[in-house]
Length: 439
Image 1 (cartoon, rainbow, N blue to C red):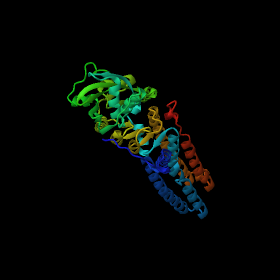
Image 2 (image 1 turned 135 degrees about the vertical axis):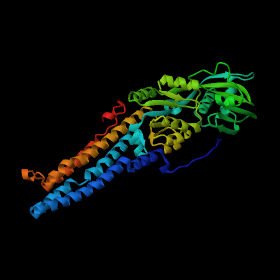
Image 3 (image 1 turned 180 degrees about the vertical axis):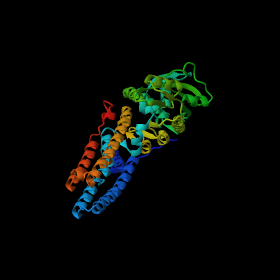
Image 4 (image 1 turned 60 degrees about the horizontal axis):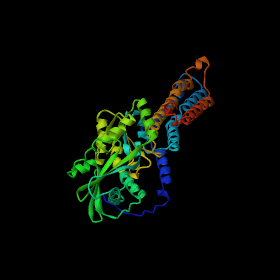
């Protein structure tokens, strides 16, 4: 909650690129539940191959067939039943989907969560930095006390916010520097989550507070500022007296409109989560056409909002970029971190969006569906062809003159593996058209 000045020196493995490579490698090596199912199926198919092969040998010997013919039937059965294709059915799709996801800006950290993206019924978006650009610009500076002007107010507020990591603080500092305002050094800086910051500037106690923080200090909101939407307003108190207020606007990303519409077309509800006041949250939510919003949410309350949606029976994906989003990312069935955010958020999330593009969330869900479908297709093919191939290999139609030679069995087994590999390679990410469900 305070300000700290540190110097960090990192080796090559600490670079962003190295972390991306490591995350992709770990994702490819991680087994999902579907892959575990494939492994169990391959184990039982191996038992079936040995059992049916021996039964075929014994059966043909029992009916008086020659030893060479009986061994040939047994060998053909075991060759065709070899679980080679089944063993590759899921790993091939995992490898292809992880690599292609990374190429398209989706870093998968949790395979199971990625495959479960097909179940998502509600997406909860953190507003700042996800739906919006996350870079606040000062829209207006209002003076509420005698002896103050715009430059003086920006000076004390900017001095304090110069030690803050919050986007609002950065916006105030940027405006002060743009106007050539000198920023004195602040002392005893402290941040109170969701309420504001405070400290000593030029010997005076200064606070920059949210509307909620202002009311907690015993001040009522100035006339006319309560219901203004579309902007975020902070209030500057000097020695406990209201000196002025600063209104900041955060631009909505152009991609956010299309992302919300694309999700809603597929029956997925879109909710917004923000610490901003109700008027601002409502204005943004209505402009984007969202299904609902949570406003004035303190950082430690975000996880509870995820639980609230889950309590309504929703399968929730949470998208955020900050340290305070991490508990909510962990609580959601699918946690999605924006790549431009903090390392803590990225480490907590199941999937990381490298490009910070809301459209990638839609692509992630659709690609998750396509990946799961490819896995199911491969599993069906790798096991299903045995239903026809095993009886033929055992010689049930020998009386009709239909007998599979061992070399034919080897060709069929190899062909099944080739089909599984080709099907995995056909997986595509069509982010621009948002049509991955047809891949």
